Image (cartoon, rainbow, N blue to C red; front, side):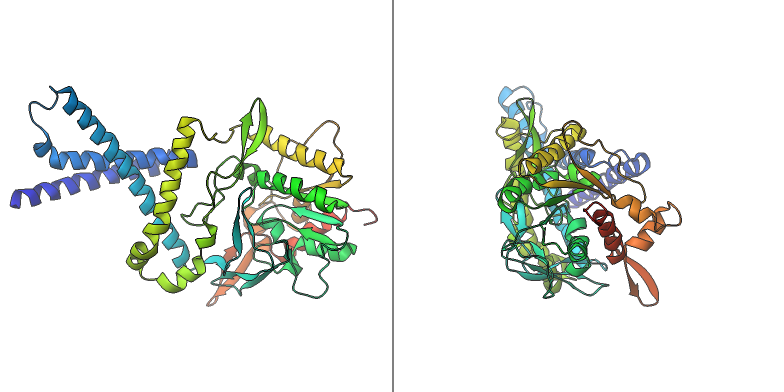
Length: 438
C-alpha cells in the first residue's frame, strides 16, 4: 500500500511538472494563442495525462508477451486511442464548465435577464417576439429590451417609429452594435435615424449575429417589407463569425449558427450544426443560484448542460469526418464579397436603396474589399464621424469616449465596449447624411 501511495505521488509530481513546462512554453512562445491551435494545446494536455496514467499502471499492464500477440497489440492500441479520446473531451467538458462559472460569477457580469432568445432552425437563434427582458450589468442599471410581434427591438416610448403594419422605410441589419447592446432602444442609431428623418424603421439586428445570418434575414425581410432603404452594418468581425460554426460566447457555452461553405465552386450557407440550446441558457438565474458554490453548479447543472454540448460536438465532428456536414470555407475575403453582393442584388431586385455602414471597433477604419461591378450603394462612414470627435487616433481615447463606464467606489471602471449613446448619435449622423434631403 505504501509503495502504491509513493508511486501515485511521484506520478502526480511528474504530471504537474509536465503541465507546468507545457504552460511555460505556451506563454513564452504564444504558439497556442490563436483559436485554431488551442485544440493542439488541449491534445498535448491529454497526452500528458495519458502518459502519467500508463506510467502509474505500467507494471500491471506490462508483460513479456504483450507485443507477441496481434490481438493484445490491437487491444493496447485501442485502449490508447479510447483513453485519449475520453481524456481530451473530459478536458473540454471541464474547461467549458469552469469558463461558464467564471463568466456568471465575475465582478463585471454582463448578460441577459429572462428568456430573451429562442432557437431558430435557420438563424440558430433569434429574439423572442412580444417579449420584455433586459440586459444586466453589475456596474450599470439594467437596460430594458422590448420586442414586437416579429421579434424586432422597439422602443418603450409611444413615439416608436417602428410599426410593421405601416410601410417600412428603413431596415437595419447587423449585430449587437446595430442592435444597441448596453443602450436603451431610444439611444440607438436606428431609432435616432428614424426619429430625425420621420421614417418608419425595423431594427432586425441581433447580438452575436454574423454575415451569414444577415444574408438569411435579407432573403426573408426584403421581399416581405420592401423598405425604401436597407442599412447594412459592415464590420470586420461579421464575416469572421460566419466562417465558424458557433456564435461568439462570453464563457464556455456554444450557440450553433449558420456559416458559409463552398458548394460546386460557389458559396452557400449551411444551417447550424445542431439545434441551439439557448432556451436552457439562463446566466443571470445561474448567477443568483450558484455563485459562490462551484461544486453545486458542477454536479447539479454543469455536467448535464455541457455534457450534452460535448456530445453534440463529437457528433458534429463525426459528421464532418464522414462527409455528411461540410466545414466552413477558409476564403474570408471572397465569402465576404459574395455576401454583401448578394444582399445588394436582393435589394436591387426589390427597388431598395442600399447604405453600407462602415463601423469598426476602434479608431482605425475597416478597409475590406467593396462589391464592384453593376452595384449601386451608398457608404455611411461611421468610423470617420467617430474619429472627428477624437483629438488623436489613440485606442484608449476611443474607448474612453465611446465605451460604457461605471463607478466602483471612487474609481471609474470600464464596463462594455459596445458604442455608447454619444457614439450612436455620431453613427446616426453618418447615416442621415446619406438620406435624401439630409
